[in-house]
Length: 345
Ligand SMILES: [Zn+2]
Image (cartoon, rainbow, N blue to C red; front, side):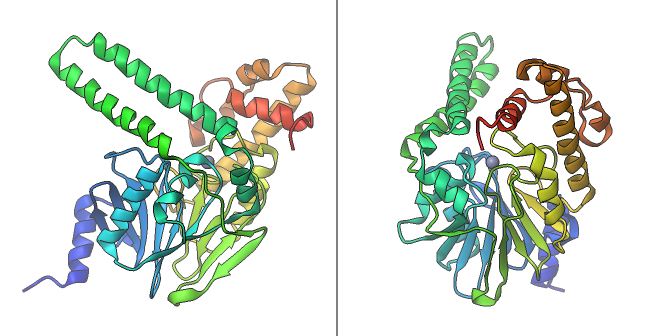
């Protein structure tokens, strides 16, 4: 008896072992991506390591067109995403949504051409029309990638076996390709902005965009599909603690409290695998609240940001977040000091 297509897809899912469990209807492996079909016509796009993508994207097929949330780290990675979209649909991509302004989510935008509509929070617009090339988070990423290439060159020189040399050579080519791809970056701001919320109804799909308050940046959007009960959270909610270098740690727990009011049963984050367990949100909320209290307490005792970063005790989060050592992220603490002292807003 021939296998019906839907059952075949389900079987493939079982064989591949989807981290999303039964809701992932099918896994499609393209040259550069793993596309997890998390609901009919909705694909969670994760780079497979063929080139550096850094962040996740979401592909939402509508009756006549396609909406894409986030575009990876470079135009080259954005083009790879577009090629992967072509594997599942020939419909035109008409609309992009930026979850936030960070380079690793927004710099693939030019791959989608000059006529694309780009929706983002007004803070995302401000950041991308301000001085994005000199944003400290972007600058430090450039340094990090250069350092990686330099380190691999040194290691390759010192390699003692052919196998090791081959492995290092491959890594070096991967990172050199990424560094070269950065030359093509053209920061591209949203063409439409929102401040609180917006809903797209075209093409048989409801797509809600929500700003619930400041968190990972000043303009994080949650992209919510009410019918499918799926939320794409960008970096405001990852599987664990997010990067805090542009964050608002003292406001973050409240923002996540508002996020939890949405009726979703699957969270798709900007990095790492999707998850269903809402207690993960509770866990990071507790962390951001405790970090705020601990940093305020140590600051009031007169400690510098450096001292506070090494003394902060968040080990009560060992079981839930694996924080077993004394200390907190220095960049986060410095930013919290700057915010508390009114040096930044
Ligand atoms: Zn980010």
